[in-house]
Figure 1 (tube, rainbow, N blue to C red):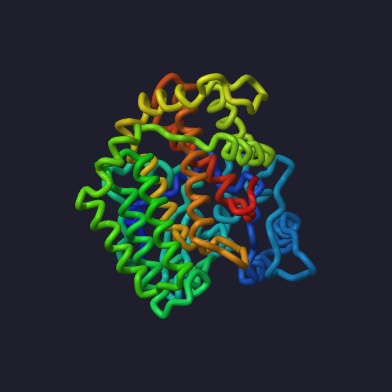
Figure 2: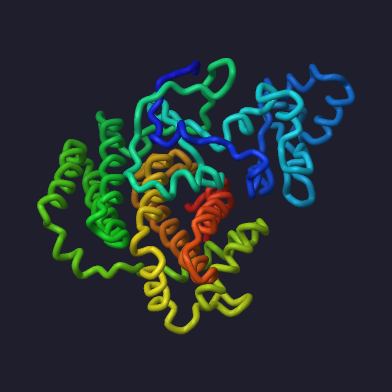
Length: 391
């Protein structure tokens, strides 16, 4: 794809790498950094000493450069990094010698039934700081996209809406469901817990239409759900929902425990601090007495006037993951209810980490909040297993 039109969040064009000021370089978390064939061939054009140095840092499966990847060192860092954490390839030869993976991160693009979209990954601390603290609703806009000096667009995911519904208007259904899902999360007149409840009610209603193969009713039902909200049909129910969270504690702790076994130092330190903030005993995964009550109290203390942070995180997830469908799922059988369960788990885990982090620091700290989300995304969202297999 050459310099094509794409849909992207308004903040996409504002991103700028912080380079040597970055507190958590992107190539040091035991990620798999693929080397595409063009990049592999470019390395062979370099002088022999440099070619040999680089090739010693690359693992090729069955001599197939399409399956090549950079070897991580004993500390889980890219072996081509310089001591200051910057890339030796970029420094010495420029961006055209970077692999597709390295060239576009934290940007990434996906194709939804032939239509291009572009997003930023919150696993990058600069992106987390850019996205989380915006007070205006996240919206998509049209733009021309290019990822390299040749004007090429590199995409990593494809979503086929027919995997989720056999309706003739499957594409229309997808965009409508995603649009309404994001609109629900951005209903600032309600607290975030109630917004998530509304989202659950909406997806459950749509799932009934999909199961019954009532394809013609899906878009109409989605519009009707928003109209009922605007008409005040849920206002009484909203008054019964406190501004807190009814955490699925056992589920999120089991996932966080498995994530901690990845031994990512920054994430593990963040998790340990958050758990200490919540009053967990060192090394224990058993919640302390009155944990739910204390959690809601501290959540109100630190985030009652900053719910836009969680809103932005969830909205970004909805847009960038193709919710309620999901282009990252490698399952043969997928459902919007499974994707809803994954989004709810992320919501619970991020709130758990953020509230615990603020409690540990005895106050709200913008950098600590951004780092917390970034560390979580580095481990959780870069894991090819995904939430459908965790736990």
